Image (cartoon, rainbow over all chains, first blue to last red; front, side):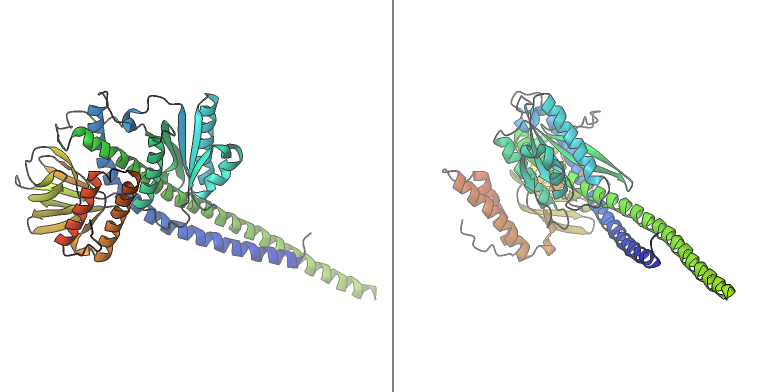
Length: 291
Length: 143
């Protein structure tokens, strides 16, 4: 039976925990709004890029000299998994769900006898994967001092991926990130970027016959690397929004739990206080009667 | 209106302009071009330069560092790598862009004994020319 003093201290500490989680929730809500706006603002570019790519790639993929970024290296022996997670914890299952998907993917590939390489973006995923897949790490991108995800960040990550591809280090690259659906739902997603996967565009005559300047191949060669940067950027933005969403709902839960705990502890505190008073009264009365 | 078309300028981070225009001047990779409504469909890459949009009461100028443009008869969409309205373009921004390009240029120079790829030299020169055009001083422009 905890003493009154103990209970009082517990209530005090749970109260300050609740204050912290409440503050974190509100910060996450503010950041979420900004992250969502950023994700929305980036959408027109990505959409346009995808539609132009679809038109171009449809024409080029048939030809024999299609760029390797589009057609692939002709093998799928070596896979690069780009695992994008956050730099901070306390975001519910946000990081674990990405890591779980990536780990499952890696195990499947290894079971099929493929070679797997892992590039981590963000500290949390690296920490979680280190134990069982640490020997597959080939690099890490630190996002700790990135306050707002910019296109520059995406570009440098994409540059890293591309130079590894050109050096022949892998055949297939896949991004792992959380797709933002709503505050309570983020879906861990795997998206293959090399060789480029072209979404089947509505080929219903919408694709006008374009002139290309300089040449079709020239444009495609310039566009493919850029489209990878765009996809990395989109993934980073989705991830940022998902992280804040996950943190917001995790902290909302924590705040609610702390509230429940305070109520329970307060009841217990009042009961034992009452019990102590009753006990003292009984002692006084029985002492008086004994006289 | 038959003589106007929809113009969009988007960068990866946000959409910069979405207006009706009668005439758009683009710094195409193979030469400047003016796009008007009814232009033949073209997709072209861009070199660093200035995009000028003219329409009913609008006259906007944006700097772009590269990217590409998709032109159909009814619309013109510029997907810029990086873009700023000309009046927001400061010496500081410009210096940074030139410095970045120069770093790439020098890196290529070190890697390849035959000198950097001619495209890169041209891009750098275009960038400097753009700066001069809008009255910014390309410091250390010793090409």
